Image (tube, rainbow, N blue to C red; front, top):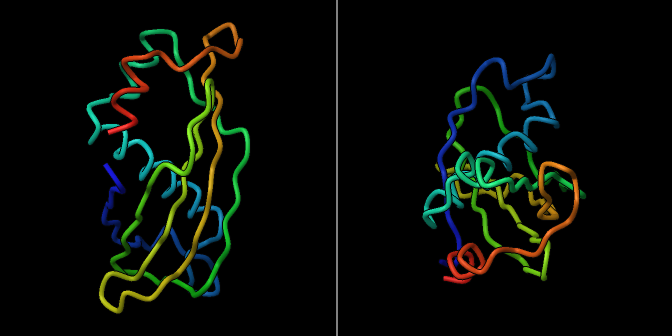
Length: 132
């Protein structure tokens, strides 16, 4: 799977006093995109947690290009940038669905850890699904 997109309607609660989406909400959208990307590959994050696997955010960045406003429909495009032995990086693009204007780009990096917070190798069955 090359990339995966989700649509998000900007809620009033997503905006700040300047009538634009509050900057931290983009990171929430990245998470939603990442979880839905994994789900589309047949990987339930909830099931991974039951198997003692967690993917905390080790690094995150966002570059803001243009503002999103209340009631805009945005697309969050998610794809895997790279996969190591025990970590994975995702990239994101947030676009205004109507105009196709690029609103933001971002990236997150995640180690695979167990509930004891020890780094573990990506299990082969998960690596196979992530590689499709």
